[in-house]
Image (cartoon, rainbow, N blue to C red; front, side, top):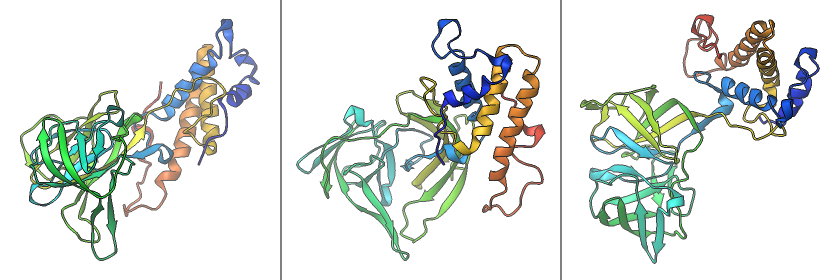
Length: 335
């Protein structure tokens, strides 16, 4: 699914409705109010709780630490296995978080790594030659490739000896498109079974600090620091077991710069939704009595688009009698 339709093409169709002339370059302001209305339509379509497949993204895996509730994560992690297993988020690539001299690697982290000298660690999520590899042959599974033996821990800096091959400067890519948290799983990475023990974890809006440790059941994104770093919290507090955490989120709505931009990430298959959304916003802009009717048509178009997802096969064995996203009593009116 991709987007090739431009905002201008939708504006052109809308301008065939006599009441909406003119809708662009009004008052000498380039692209306005059409551009602002297009942005608003994108924001409404991608607003929580509308969970679209085309707008989903998966974070890289990060690893919990013993009895620690909150984590800073920017897309890459350093972690160890065995009796001292735990993880810590790696700092951003823009901060030169990973550098190498000979076989000595310097790792800047977002928080203090509470492991020990001698730990053998792995790196995931940088998309560079520093990354280790997870693989399964159908009988066993595990991490291989680059390993990092910790030689020193000083605050948020780890020094380690590399076994493997890496070069250059790297680090975490940063998570700059986070909208809202949709789902997640946790896996026990301290086993070598072909299918790692996996649990689903509920994504929620907020979790308050607490002192109960156990297997995490809920997760939330507490704060987007705006730098590509997220603060993530669990409930209960992860205990002594190190869990690999895989979270799925909906990306935030983009802000197109001009009318030549496409409706991305909204695919062409949903052009009828954006067209109706623009009409609804256009009529509201001119304070037309048709605005409420067009808004209802917009809501209906969104429900129709969402209903297909709800009827696809899933690992849930019961279909809802009414749509989870489209039932009117559950509906979020995007005004």
